[in-house]
Every structure is written in C-alpha cells, then in structure tokens.
Image (cartoon, rainbow, N blue to C red; front, side, top):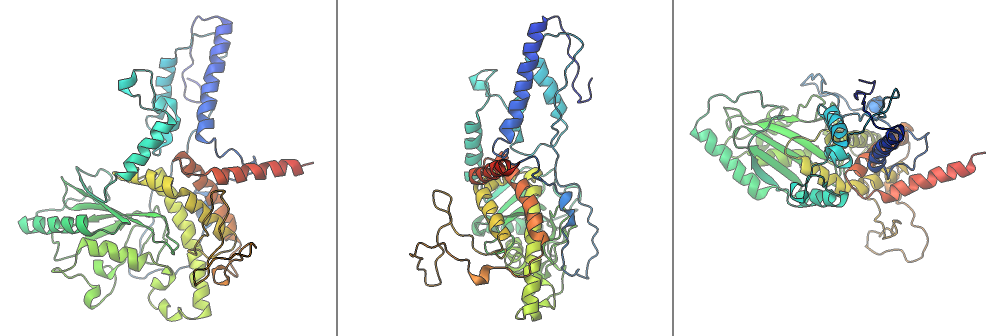
Length: 463
C-alpha cells in the first residue's frame, strides 16, 4: 500500500507493456482532473483559489441580539477534494487490470462526501447505463440533460418518505391526536396551493412533524439568488404553540434574525418580542405565513435595520453607510452559504441545488464582478448582449441611450468609503464559486476566457 492509499500492483507483463500501461493510467487520471477543471485552468499559478477557512477573516459588524446566546458549532462546511497523484510500483513490471484498478479507486472514494455532480467527472464513479451494456457510461451531455430535466420537474411541494439529515429527526414529537394530524394536513394543503414561486417545501410521510423548506433570496437584496434552508418541527402542542424552526447557517450569521447556530428570531415564532398580529395565533397562523414572513421581513433589502432600534437611523447618512457596510458583509456570507449548499446539499433538495446554480451561476458571477467594480450590493446588474457585453442602462423613464458612448454607472449605485477588504475577499469567493458552478455545468465561459486572457497578458508582460 503506497502513500496515496493505492495498493502496489504486480504481474508478469513485459517491460514495454508495463510502461505503456503506466502511461495509459496516468493519461486517464490527468484527463479526469482536466475534465473537472477544464474551464478554470486559465488562471496563473499565482492565482489564489481560496477556501472557506481563508474567508474566516470576514467580520460582520452587526450588533448581537440579546435574547439568545448561541454557540456556533456547525461542522466544517465543505469537502476538500483529494488530488494526490496515483503512485505506481517502480520495482518491477505488472499486468494492468483496468476493472480491478477502477474498483480500487472507487473503494478509495467510498467514504468521502462527494458533492452532487462531481461523480459525473470521475469515470469510475459514473453510473453505467445497464440498457447499453456493461462498459457504457453516460456522456457529459447526457448528464447535463438529466440535471436540467430533474430541475425543471422539481415540485414546489412534495411529500417524501423520511428525512435522515433533518435537524429534528432525533427529537420525537411525542403523543399526538387526530386534531393535530388534521391541522398539519391543513397546513400541507395551504403550502401545496399557495407557495410563492421562490419557496420550495418537502414534508415527511413517516414523520408528519418534520418539514424542510428552501427560500430563494429576493432580487435587489444582498441575498439575491442564494438558497436558504430551514428545518421545522410541529410540536405535540401545535397549533397552540408555533412550530420550531432551525436555519442551516453553515456557522454564518448573515442577518440579525438568523444566528450562526441556526436560531431564527421572529415574533411569529415566539422567539422575539411582538404584539398583536405579529404574534402566533393558533386559530389563524400557519406554516405558510412563517415562510413568507422570513422571506419578506428577514431577507430584505437592508437587513441592518432589522436590529431593534436601528430603524431610527434609516434616514441618516450614518445609518445608510452602516447599512451599506452590513450588506457588503452579508453578500460575502451569502456567497459562502452558496458554497455550503453546493458542497453539502440538504437531503431531497440535491436536484434543486444543482439545477438552480447551473441556471443562475452566470448571473451570480456577473454580480460579483459588478460589485467588485464599485457598485452597491443588490443594485441591478446590466444585462449582457450575445457577445457578453453589457447593454446600455435605461433611465427612470425607460429610454435607452443612443449616443453610442459607454454608459456611466448611476451615482446611486456606487459605493463610497467601502472597506478595501471587500474586493480582496470577493476575489477569493469568486474563484471558489467559478469552480463550483463550472462543475455544475453553468455558463462560465466568459469568466474562464477572461482568466485565460489575463494569464496571457501577464506572460507577455513578464521579462
């Protein structure tokens, strides 16, 4: 067994045959790695592709809510891919057995938590199509088409058998009655009928007390295009008491109401002070209302003012500057949450995660670039033409510029006094997102071409 974990192979083949086999094996391995990152190889060796551990320097400036003291003990939020080269026995010849070799490689990866989509780039992890014979694998085009199809047919509401990774799966609901069951079924019907297009829900057939939802971040906010997952449990006292809700934070607090430990502070849930219609009403309040409240009241344009008392500074220059700084931090955390979801997708939402970021990856990367150029987080990113060039912005009246001159950014969209670390941190996150979106098959060609062009310019400028 060598250092990479691969058994040494021995056999009685000739020396020339052995050399040929080694060359073939190395070519297979190189092809796998090249296929996975083929559109991301334009960067120079000096390009920094960061990890979430490198981003731990991001510091949020929001004040802590006083009601809860949560410890942020979320596990590591991503899986690092092992890229050690295959080692071979240099002591003698061997006869290469491809089937055995691939099986040994597959065994090496059995215990790893591979992100959805990675298997598609690794031949020995691809699923064979039994109908086409034992040695036939799905092509990349077929895999891409399958991802797209699953995403298009992903239901907004569905009943699944069970959750194995639900936050409350190990917490029994206790004794319940017929009225409890009827009320939850009523909630299910409301969710199935009235869910907004940007909210998806799964409920459990075997555990009616469990529910999982994902909310797509609204446009015009620092949460745009992100996926935010919540686990809920209907307790045995429901609906006399509200459901309990846990936010999958990945250890990041990107909103005054959403803690890194998963706590959701909302008057409707009884986890924050409220009065009148803000509080839970056993006769009228529903799970649908909870989800819509999180989307509209929590994931908003200026989350800084969610903190009690801060709304009084909303019209002051100091308050607006603080809100802008908070949005900068929040968007960085939102990007890291995207990486968290891509690398560890919650059960029963794998197809949605893969399809969503495949579809929205280009827009997210374009927004990252736009913000790094000095524009406010959440501002509208100009649309691109077929050549990937930004189209002219329209004014408030809807007319477009016909002068042919390059459109100037709107003053209201520009940031002043932004922290220098924003651009540096975003550059690291951009590289990580580009890599992940590329694996998912998103349209990343423009950005990979830009990296390749930058590399060539650096090489040409080098002495």
